[in-house]
Image (cartoon, rainbow, N blue to C red):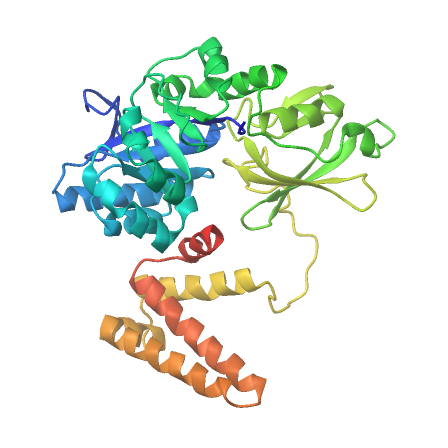
Length: 429
């Protein structure tokens, strides 16, 4: 079976730093979160994080989980959490931190014993198995095939010839060139390459993907449903592109594409335009590093305009403003109807009250009384929702839901949880 092949950097996490390998022989990076962001922005398809905290040191382990949570929050690619798993609770913590999948190391008998339990609890699609020799998989092939979705070969040896499973295999390699990558990806079961072979060459991921694409090796890439020929061009032979922030839907800029820019955008996953003033191809961020990473492309009903949803690095506008649309021409007073903006606005007021108390503020009264009072009010408002839902008038439940949301946001502010934490978790489910 062939899989879309993935380039997967990994981070060996120990005491707050990223190390060279499992032996923790050399600290490579003092800020693993920034390193993960760099990997994500270089086109990584996934990121594996190995928690190498000292076994039995719960404080160290919790600090590692906090870092993993921060990484999952800032990167735009799926994260696989591995290392220091001893019980189901550790798998739960990795998944709750934001990891798309969590790994069991089958060199540890205890991990073998809990695979059914964690798979039944969280789903087979959430569970990977790490192995360093084929015997670890062969001896437990029924468990692996039934309760895991992917294997990770961590031995830096050719252990892909496993005829007793059809599960995809990610291979960790210490070093590799594009020829090695091609050879590995010729193996049908190999779904990805990881380890320092990718870490050291993360800047070449786009280049390696282009080579694989030219050799008809299936890779993770943007698949366009429409060719350039399907789009209607303006009198200059171009198509205008409206660019939005994929998280907030804020309109960032307007630019134009010709055929080369369109194809380059699909190939690299970075927004590329045609500069009419310079009469040349324009990779957004090439000089400023304010790249735009493609999340989705849409054509309008007439196929003559493209809407691009992107992750914007830095500012979209050359003036330094985040959006090019900052010059207000005219406006009327109106009540905001966008649910996200309303919730953000109320939440920002609540957070401001916490930092800048205002006399007579009910919000400050709750903060002053502390967590027990806040929890009491959340519980009371939840009960009010239940009572209101039994009544025929929908206005009552709207009122009670609003009360509950307000008190819930006070609780969020008290516990330093924001809306993005919640929506990110919901989007993963």
